Image (cartoon, rainbow, N blue to C red):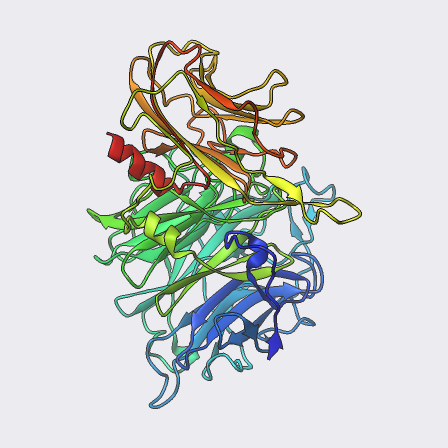
Length: 606
């Protein structure tokens, strides 16, 4: 076994660097895992010695018997010296191919069988009109393993794909097909379904047009002869799953889940700044009109051009991975670079659909511009793990049970335990009060070190304020602990009808405001403002609703400056000093609230 050393020096399990590394060559993508019948984890990955999309890209698999702490030596599903083999997903058949044999495991992937070295693309991107990245075209194939993934069949088998409009309109009129896959296969009523993303062309943004299909096999789960496995391409007709009416040309990386009533739910990325979804009630033949996904509270989710994945868990509930920002809809770029914080929602079935909770931060990279994507989920003895990749490093992470309890609404929060300040619970809020010291976000890693190096303490605090503003005029101070130099905190109204928190250490400043559609003059509002030094995120929960940017900005949450040491100022906190209204309570906590805690606190106040 290859021993993988875990990252150390951090107690925040959301920090990507604390994950357990999955072995790879240089490039690594889509680490997908299934649990084998002998109890191991089998991981399949696209890897290679070069960059993504270059020659030598191929498929490997490896096994772990200890939840990803160590991995066996990678085994080639396809060799590095063959044509490109890419973007593999796994399906374990629930029945054995023959009496006493282990459950057969299928590996589905792209294969450049014809060794095509270039395909026609847009001259806007390539002067000669040819794209030389050839890992998303060719043939869709599978191999299988009958020994828990230790070895794979020598031969690959091609899956026929029915031509549709998007194929016939590509530069080769469908003689060469453009496609790839991300989503985990599903099973329903004894049939297997494998996702396939069809591509219409290559150009700026790599793919200029895309839509989703399902490849359905009625007999794969029981047929022992791979030559006799049958396939059909769904949905019926000439058009796959696209964006909602009025949306853009990109609908891709579809991933599917089966509901308890046999409906199929599909969710996928767009370049509209929002994820799209649809339901099928007839096994994938027809679908509801696609719509942009939303939370149970009715607010539309925000998501860039990145994998967003929903999983049905063994308990019948759902988890959803996304990035909670709509960057590409505001910047008109491809949205590929907005993956630096991963958020997690919990889902419950209601009236034949999934109702999604408001999200929690699941993962982040300490290098705040670097993200991750292409996740998978695996459950083990009641524990939940996710995989992800940063294209050069892939990892496994165990999900903090508190996050799961929050998004599934399973815990009764005691949100008011041990605040460092609590005003207004049993008496009116004063005009002034002693200000507690707030934590340092950075400090000296070793006070005796000659280079005076610093570290991120991952400290946090939460402000909870109940306030009525009789007008939304700007520059009304709700809370103010600033000194003459500006050091301290300021919570004030803005010219945009919002409330903004300003944090200043006398030399640098961070500020963030709530969304523009949240406040109303003359109404009591409950504000929870979380300053989380781990992911360096500032977030607002207003009247139980996490700000997500609304229609005015791509992000509802902001970033804490890496240069801000703390937000300590005067020894006195001035409350409502220029406010036209009333502050009814102020609480300060020396930790970051979960979104679920903020919602529970609001509901306790309501």
